[in-house]
Amino acid sequence: QNSNDKSKNTVTSQLKSTQADTLAPEVADFFFAHRLDFATSGILCIPLNRKACQEVWENFETKYTKFYFIAIVSGHVDSEMEVIDIDIGDDTRYKDTSKKMCSFREKMYCKNARRSVTKILVLERGYFNDRPVTKVLLLPLTTNRRHQLRIHCLEIGHAIVGE
Image (cartoon, rainbow, N blue to C red; front, top):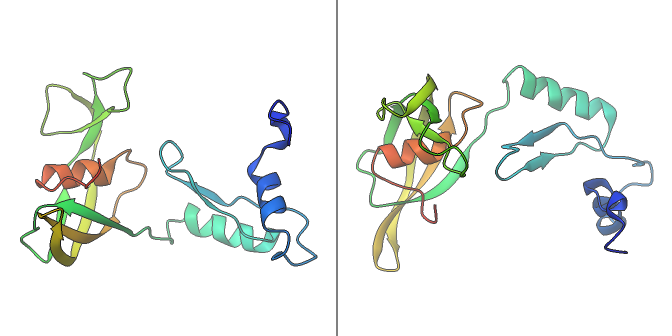
């Protein structure tokens, strides 16, 4: 494909070219139901027909669908299960960087804070490069909070490894 022809380099064109052998003949197009965490990872949910797309979209819209995340965090988390209820808002110290959110514990810098709740379940404790780490299952109980999981893990003293 010509690198100057950007109009053809879409998710749809890439799926059709890479998945052609696995698609049913009746799949003429893809239906995009949801894009999780658009500004960061951009995970796509792509049903293969219009009816499935409508059902998936309605589940996301009514918040019937829940998102679970697995993360490795620094240190050994003490409790087996924890609910973190810390407001998150805009960090006024960082206007032109990727660090744009903060917890309300930093009240002086945190504006437009909204309630944010995350449930954490410990799956396993261990070591990585001779440092203690914990594998956790994260369930955000509130939605549309940028960097909620990162901020909440940091707030309890267990930053996500690699962040």
